[in-house]
Image (cartoon, rainbow, N blue to C red):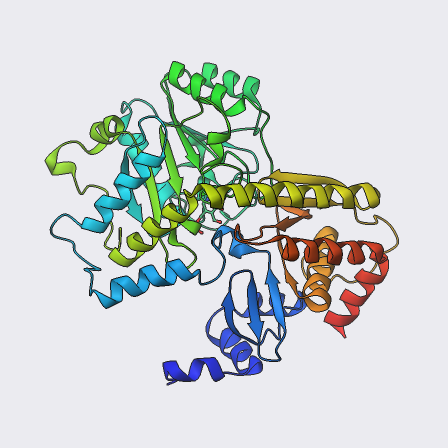
Length: 459
Ligand SMILES: Cc1ncc(COP(=O)(O)O)c(C=O)c1O
């Protein structure tokens, strides 16, 4: 049995072995291929993960959207410390929880429209499941259909899996909602949505949409979200916006649907950065009217509940996170940096038009859609996955990490898009470093990069 105090002293190879033997063998193998092993880190702060050898890694992955405030933000740590120092009540299942009540109040104050009632949980998938269950209860029993969009990602638990379209994570599982009840429309396509809502008139419970799709970083055209909300109101369909990845000031506003006027959904789901990068917490937020329809009777008040829904210290951290994000000077600084970064990436695109097809995204969630050479390299036995593009993107991720000390990521659904999620607390020096490094990497020949990747992983 290891003692807690021994964890920091674990060597990289010991950790690798433990992870392989006791956590996830194939994932450990993929980390190795991507050059993320050895990753001999000691601690993390702000945009950086510090290594034992004195070097540091610029973490522009933000752990897929968890680290909007960076690693171990000083005020988030202080919020946790405040809970510890005052022995605040962390768990209370019987009696009104003060921290939950305040967090729900503050969310309602920051959100537009009637979004004023929160249900808390731990993960994003749970928040989405809560949304779907609420929608079903709030609608008439005759309705049986839901709508999802092409390329969506809403989580991987049984209940939410049928709504994740981007990759086939469902095969081999007995998914909760009958897939034949889930209709699929293209993202950002109002005519297609109108057609489906006409075809299934009065039978649709809800539509679930990411206002900016995270798997391939798809941004809708202006007007899509408010027209969608309007159509849903007309057709009595509940609109659910999943802002688990793109919310909390990641994409230009507190929530990305707020980039448009009159685009407030009936139900909003939030998670990831709500916990300030230190706690697991999610929220499903709706109007008191809809909540009442679903669970208004006393006997139904715990019809949907969970033991760890709104642990005190997680709520405390979330309260602090919202306070930080709501500061005008913080927001001004983020906006300035967003423009600076976008300009830098667009300059790279202009310099390397043959390699960068598009700069995608909004705010501080940007992506580079890369063009990989399509011939001459296909005969190589690819190190993982049959997909040629995944191996190409793997070589970019590996090079960024190993040569430049930068952590980024990509998704299997869109393997040609490099995802860049700097913490919102990043600064111009760090952004410059990223742009300069990317400039050097793109100046390199992709064939050479790929060759180094194959040699570095296979031999
Ligand atoms: C948009 C979106 N929704 C839902 C989820 C699921 O969240 P979790 O992994 O916490 O269950 C994710 C996770 O990446 C996400 O990006």
